[in-house]
Amino acid sequence: MDKDAIIKQLKDAIDQFKRETELLKGRIKELVANWPCMRTRILHQV
Image 1 (cartoon, rainbow, N blue to C red):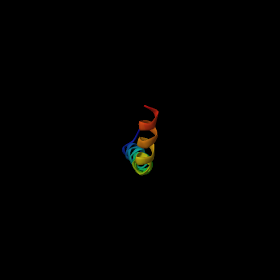
Image 2 (image 1 turned 180 degrees about the vertical axis):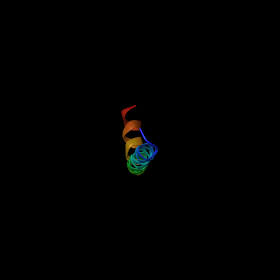
Image 3 (image 1 turned 120 degrees about the vertical axis):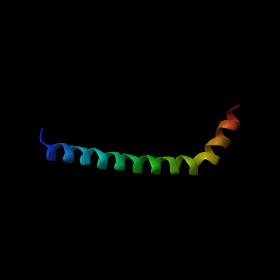
Image 4 (image 1 turned 90 degrees about the vertical axis):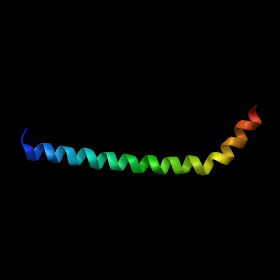
């Protein structure tokens, strides 16, 4: 594999990592926003 192909592969991997990181950030924001509701539900089950 030549140098340019390796660089392209690395750039593609970095781009995918960035996309997945953004998805995770969005999911974390959802979980944080829903935490008070979820906490209340959990406490009422005990």
